[in-house]
Image 1: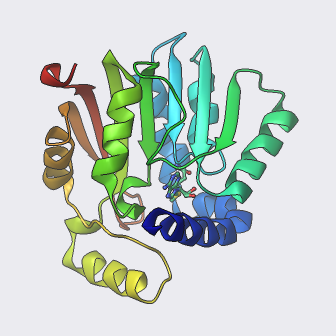
Image 2: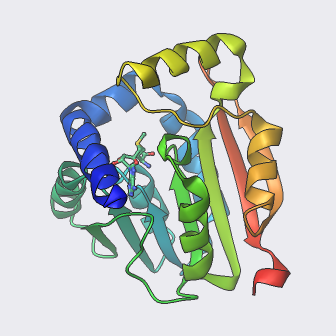
Length: 220
Ligand SMILES: C[S@@+](CC[C@H](N)C(=O)[O-])C[C@H]1O[C@@H](n2cnc3c(N)ncnc32)[C@H](O)[C@@H]1O
């Protein structure tokens, strides 16, 4: 019951954003093109099987697909997935598959992926611990988790701004963490962080917080 409400709310919000999403990223998040996508590609292994959770219009999935054997991209918003599929056809990419799914209940077998990526989304999710538990389940024991959030908690100014935007329904940001808090959160969710990095925004907006983690041994 609660899940239905959450899913409906998330679908509505992100569906509405999807027509302008790529333009928004090009304008405000030049950091994707200038460093983030390359960084993710560096951390992805050749010929691996990858899951991109909350993939949006596929910006990260397409980059990962240049090296991977196969990339699955999932997102709650049908319009985001429609756009991702359209781009797949236009670019004639054969090793990417997109579908509408809820990150809280992934339709994949245990231990299926070499790498799971979740870019710019965990801070928008109300119960990220539940999502991380699903990610851990589908990740191979020796697999790698690449998680990136917006560093709202790095500055008091951003914390206030995004608290207001969440209250008025402009952009839901439920978790306002700094880099150490984010790494700590990943560590406490059954992973071991092996790399953490702050990617500064060239125009002094919010940084992206970039973490690479492995599944913790006790959870294997
Ligand atoms: C800021 S966008 C990031 C999209 C993409 N990862 C990127 O970097 O361009 C956040 C995405 O999270 C997705 N999302 C939010 N809640 C979700 C959920 N419960 N399951 C799957 N996707 C979800 C939204 O639909 C949206 O596409």
